[in-house]
Length: 419
Image (cartoon, rainbow, N blue to C red; front, side, top):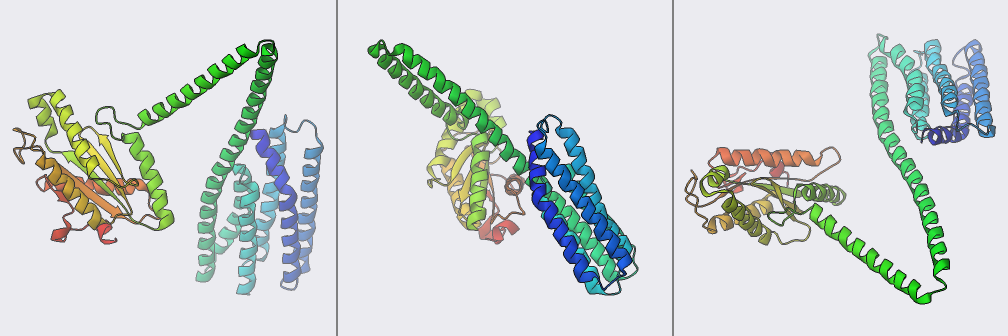
């Protein structure tokens, strides 16, 4: 993996070095009259020589037959070149900034920032390469602007700092995606190799079985049956992995998977998503008084009752934990979620399951908390769970056997009101 990452880095350098050299030449050409030639001329000469040396390293890398074996040495060489290239741009800031011409200052900032942005796609495969280049390029520029007395220049410095942080975050995310893609590539190669070996084994077996056609057919039949059996077993195991053994509804793992998928779908469609959390009132008292077997029967009955009232295929009923249940409602706002929650509360109460140890009612009841929002990339699904959990807590605090927020009493939460 590391050797392949270095190879990708050097391969991308063929383009990035040419782009950086072109940008440097254009920059010097257009800014030639702004400052003394004694500054620009030595700078562009040194920068060009450095680029040629780095091109030499790239050429030597691909000519070397053992570059994958000594990838650490080649990586260190690349990082040194990257640091020097970045330092050339950063050092230029100390020589020519701040300029009396604000357009020149802005142009310098745009060129250096643009090169750092462009390096994201070429250096992100190895974090240290990007961080080295961006730090040596932007930090000197940021420093020389922040120490100035003029407010506009300080503002430029702060903008560069924010840009540096933002691009760093983007680089880490991009780096993670690239590493995953590279890992999958190696995994696919191993899989193809394994498939090739399997094919060779099957060919050898077939050659041995050619003397007895009937035996080969029987063997193929058994293999097919084994394959079908394995696939069927895999389907069963997949189903069992997201099923709650007691209530036969989805378990917490299935809930997490479904919420993640529904959340992403809601972001794509710009639609709302609602979550209802339910808790059986004084269920511990019920278990202590009637016994755990009867408590399990109650949970089964409540799970069935809730499941019957959530009919859409895109919705989900899950056992969230213990005596707690969760309902995910896709494309449902808070008013629709409240209507379903109230129906569930009434249906559970109508089961008329005796509960002598309840402080709310003589029968088993439930408390429900709901939350609803239209997701976006700045909000994550745990926030919806947190809001629903807070609503459930409020339902308990206000006397249980109720749905919170009670929209008919103008108690809609901020999340619900947004729908």
